[in-house]
Image (tube, rainbow, N blue to C red; front, top):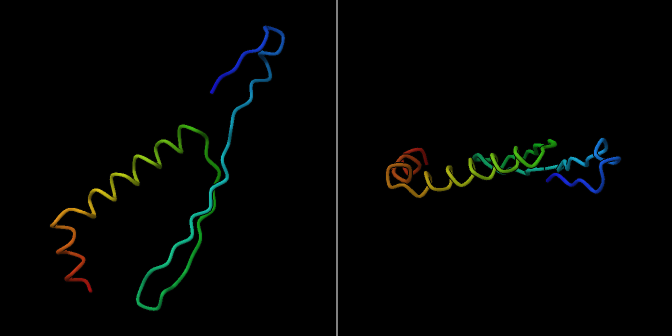
Amino acid sequence: MDVEVAKRTADSVAIPNYSVRIDTVGGEGGETGAIEFTADAAQMRNLRDKLVEVLKEHEDKHAQRFVKYLN
C-alpha cells in the first residue's frame, strides 16, 4: 500500500508490517510449538499462496495414501 498525501510528505510513507504467530500441534505426543515472525504485505501474500498450495496437496489422493501409511 503506497499513499502519497502531498509532495512534502512523500518521504515518510508508511510501510505496514504484520506480526505473525503460528501455533503448531503434532506428533504422537501432541507436541506443541510456536513460530513468530514479522512480514510485509508481499511476504504475507507469498505465505498465503504457499499455504493454499499445501492444503491442495493434502487433499490429493496420493498424499492421503502416504499419510495413511505413516500412521
